Amino acid sequence: MTLFVAPSHDPAADFAGLYAMFHDGLRRTLACLGVPPAAVDDALQEVFVVVHRRLDDPARVHCLKGWMYGIARRIAWRHHRTASRHAHKLAAVEPPVEPASLDEVLARNEAIDFMHRFLSTLDDDQREVFVLAEIEGLSAPEIATVVEAKLNTVYSRLRLARARFELAVQRQQVRTHREASHGT
Image 1: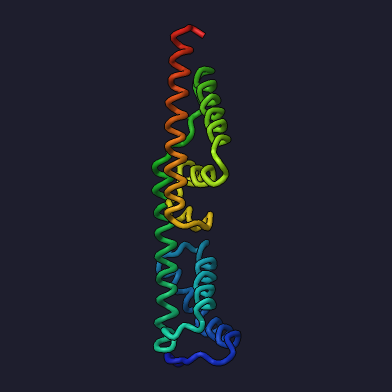
Image 2: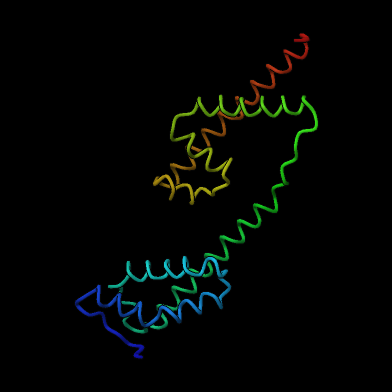
């Protein structure tokens, strides 16, 4: 196997050859780098998607094997980072507990109704960003990718939605206090 390969004039042939040459080794390497067995095939596919996209990259001409395994290493690292974030989020969330009383059920339902009413007041762009950030826990760069918007645009939409949420909460607290003091 040669380590120095210049791209041919047929990208499909290049890709098929690279796939045949490196498939087993990359799969093994991803598993050795700690990608869980259930995710190895997905990680391997990600590697070959990057390879296909960058097939004409002059950097691969110098050391094909190093280039391919470098991509695999970065994909494995990304899988570790994602798994770590997911585990951290799961650890931060307490398992749901059934409400003990009717008052708790009522309070929970009122909170859900409040959130739905609040979300209905936002425009589509702000609602989407707010839900992805505050409910789904995505970071601003992740949201920018999902909604295909500039990062500053995401931050702006999120800032405006959060300000509106704070105002809605304050209004709800005043309303609740007023109702409690009037005995209704």
